[in-house]
Length: 181
Image 1 (cartoon, rainbow, N blue to C red):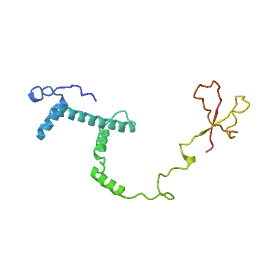
Image 2: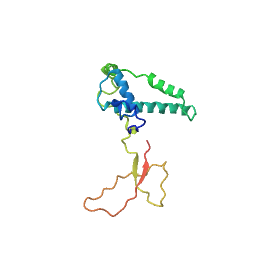
Image 3: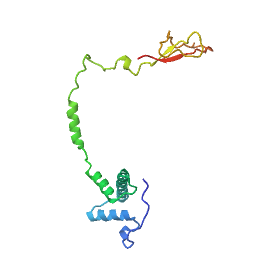
Image 4: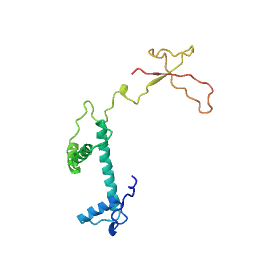
């Protein structure tokens, strides 16, 4: 996200905050009122976080207004967006999740019926690794029409092997049909 554009400057009489944009001056005042010491890069980071948070709240409020079929966002939408953000459950802590994972993973899995070892694979007809087609020889009479899809091919042939020494100039027409699975 691009840094915020410079807007109205802070009070020019304040030498410590001269040259800061309004948001930076506010962040400085908040940090000083809390007695926090900070490095130079902290202020722009906090301003960016402040802008991102405000942008997210405004976007949610706009979504609520659009859901209510309104073109303008009102204060109720902003309040609802803020409440939804602050009231949202945070979820369990990392330590609680780690304890739960250790407890669940400590239980052994039940044995697979009929198998003593190895992976349980699906039956061959359900496997996605099988070929889903057969190579069929073209019919003797080549009128350009394919045989009906419901009828199985008369014979199946393997793909022709080309000689390694020189390429063959003969072309073979292959008809590919889906297999019946």
